[in-house]
Amino acid sequence: MTTEQRTAPRRARRGEPRRAGPRALTLPETLTVKELAELLDQSAVDVIKQLMRHGIMVAVNQVIDHQVATVAAAAYGVRTRLAEHTAATAAISAGANDDAADDLQPRPPVITILGHVDHGKTSLLDYIRESAVVEKEAGGITQHIGAYQVSRDGQSITFLDTPGHAAFTAIRSRGARVTDIAVLVVAADDGIMPQTDEAISHARAAEVPIVVAINKMDLPGAQPEVVKRQLSERNLLVEDWGGEVIAVPVSAQTGEGMDDLLENLSALAEIMELRANPDRDAAGVIVEATLDRRRGPTATVLIQTGTLRVGDTIVAGSAWGRVRAITDERGATMDAVKPGSPGVVIGLNATPEAGDILKVVSNERTARQSATRHGQRAQVGSLDTVLTLDSVVKQIDAGDVKELVLVLKADVQGSVEAVVQSVEKLSEGDVKARIIHAGSGAVSDSDVQLASASGGIVLAFNVGFEIGAERTAERLGVEVRNYQIIYRLLEDVEQALKGMLEPEFTEVVIGRAEVREIFLGRRGVRIAGCRVLDGRITRQGKVRVMRENNLMAETEIGSLRHFRDEVNQATAGTDCGIVLSDYNGYEEGDVIVAYRMERVN
Image (tube, rainbow, N blue to C red):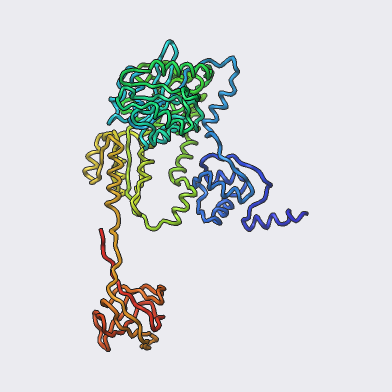
């Protein structure tokens, strides 16, 4: 028996990692401790111990991110790397790769409109569609992704219109990941702004070509050359500056340059030779989802491979069902949705999450099992917030934290996600906002009761009340605040957090006394014979004992005497005897500093 074989059992008993030789694991962005232990071929208890040695406290079902998982894996000599795609997305890609070349047919390009708020993204798409989408959006700001399809010269083009407000970064990121071409809209009179930079990053991360639409060319302050210079500073060199990026000056108001933009998009899509197999089980991405009072859960889906038909059995995240009906964005009935096309699906038993993968499965039993597994995983994630290295540091550094408890209801799932992420970033000192429940649909009785039990308020974003819920809120005294614009919601939450701040205090020194002599009292108590140097010393006041500018103790006065008499205070120039609470170690020459705390706000 080798030395390694003899020592391995002892290491196992001590909870030390078993050395299995250097290897690498591909890990998802998040996973539970139990799942990590299985991948490492270790017991969950041992993995928990390894994390505890690094100051990270976890439970077996705790959801951790890739960085925390890497800390545990390194203890076992295992290298890790982050999976490039989620399992569900990889399943779509794997399925598409199985198709024979003869089965692939041309599909419409999926084009995402990206850019800064109010730079004219929806107005540009509005002109292409010859509709009035922008008028329907509160405040003229797009609040969620819209999927639309237009036809030009017999060729279909699918457009995704994404929000430009900073709060919707996650939705915009999702839009870029499912697209073939990104159209970056930049206002000619405003230039590149913060969300424009974010949009460029999302498009680059998705590795899709970028076409720039320099919008608002009809305005007097339009400066397209300035925009081109700003683009070049971001390594986007336009064609007329010697680069490869297509940039088209346009006006969504007058239609100037719109034909040129569409021609360039069609030509680029043709060069890309976008193809998919329509004759297989469909798979796609949930772009948006909401709960319709009449029709039940509805989901806008972008099909990426296969054809989705009425009657198909589908699963999307923890939702499943049979397709009862499909409509386009205008509400017209459709029999099927082919690759590269969007459709609104009715028939799911619950509202899926925006970004979930929708798949056609063989039967309802398979769909139910898949949805249940996904729901169990989601439940673990909801009970145990994903643990990151940043959150570990914050937990260590944090003291007592006051919370503003919120229940959020919004019109669509994308809005839910955006508001949650924005609110969670708000904090005022030690006061933070915590959303205990968030979902799409009208405010219900259970929402109000949850807020009442938790001492919270309800935020309603573009939604009303279910029958009886408003009366319940009045009866329980729960505040329900309604919003249509996310700016207003965030401003109100921020003001509420400021109102919860603990009052600030400042320290005011009221007097100083020097220890001149030390007397021994009863039961070993040492009495400091002092001369008050300035100000006054008060009985039962707060004091600090300083020795050569070093803090020796911070306590209170237990007894203050002038000769044998107990006094309330001793003023400058007088002698006094001081006994301190919980401190007996003063020496001659120490200075006792008396102070009080005054409120400043």
